[in-house]
Length: 305
Image 1: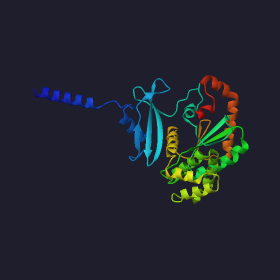
Image 2: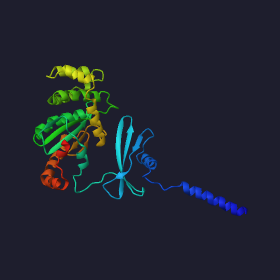
Image 3: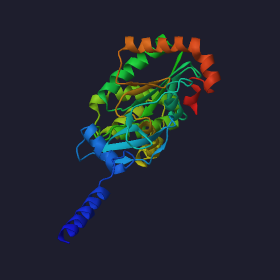
Image 4: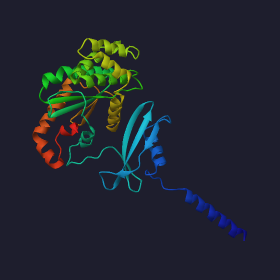
């Protein structure tokens, strides 16, 4: 009798243990979070937000987007998970019937963005930049000096604000001020752009407004209107919208440039950038018609949606 009771207790205990042990699945958010924290060596300070699984370009995989945040900095990761939750792929999936940069082209919006160059140019550059960023200053001069001179009919450049507020205390205010200038006279934005980068070292959070208004007085701009725009933060929503757009494109630092959708991070030497532009021009001469027919897109036109 005693022996039977012991066996019964043992069986019940084993049943309890087996009920508690569940197969690990990456489709379980806590399991996935623990896994990627270990994979990416993340500290507990990093905030992790995991989206619900959704269909992916591969029918046997689920797509899960993960959003990381730390001290005002953001990073997005995409994982593809097998339907049983046992296997994870980190990276990108390409469709050979589409432009490899199609997802980026669809997310880039250039309406109401400052630009220079010929409309409908075969190469479109969209630059996410920060007026307080030293590397952005170097890239801005390189772009302004070389693109109009070397590619006057082939490249159109768009400027997008992406101030890194966590490390650059006056960058967002400068972006908002630039949008005030653009609202009043679109052509004047590039004068503001060049002046801002040239004088970057002299500007502080405290003197920014006075510096901007002092510059505006030397132009044909209405300084009273600019001042009201600055004081009321009338353009903050416009800058915030571009920040959201940059995050959707996984922009993590500045400068980040999209060359016909191709992501370029950092300020490239002119020789390298020139080669990339020439390569894109050559590619479109041989593949543009085919890409249009199969994918129903025109390189450049998706950027104007």
